[in-house]
Image (cartoon, rainbow, N blue to C red; front, side, top):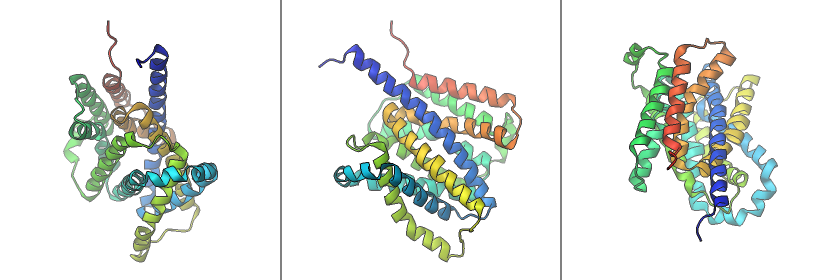
Length: 309
């Protein structure tokens, strides 16, 4: 049957709500990046932070959606071929790689590397699904990455000369590659599983997979400190990033589409910079405003289709 005007409006509402969820997810993840960087200075091991983050998140998800997860258990088991690899790539792989990167690389390097997300998502779509990339989309990619780069180098082109690919940078590259896979693979989210039961299942798989990694890290002499700083970092990572941020990102990616979701990764340096201004008292400069305008212009070019006459 042909789509009706009501169906079209419903699809657009779902798409726009997805954009809003993606923006909020990036905001919470920007806060998580600050926590991850601060954890390095507080002698909190990266795998320990990720393990206790998801142990805590699993408890919260179980309280919120334990009954719903149990009711949908047959669907969850039936779709284990999606759930298990997705959890290993995203919840375990991405977060471990990102926390490890933040132990050694600079904020400039890590943030700049995150800006290549939309290019990776476009390439995945092009290589796997043969999704065509229009000149308008490529222009959007260039503008948004240019805006993100302007922010992270603070309007100083000479800062690019100081960039060096080190161990932490390599881990950041691994992390953004896994993030791109997450943004691309969410299109195959089972429709029969609601988002909170899905997150509960993903958290359970992640905790089981993280346990031996955490044990190896601890056996190697990197132990989790028992203090309120560590507790506060774990709580933010679990509730702010895992519960709120990841749920919003997965749902937003499903509503808006994987290709569109990839462009929102370039909002990360904007939100991270804004948090630095609000939380750390850093000054607002011209390149923050100019970079933000370029990123938003790029996103609009990439995801908003021109009206047809």
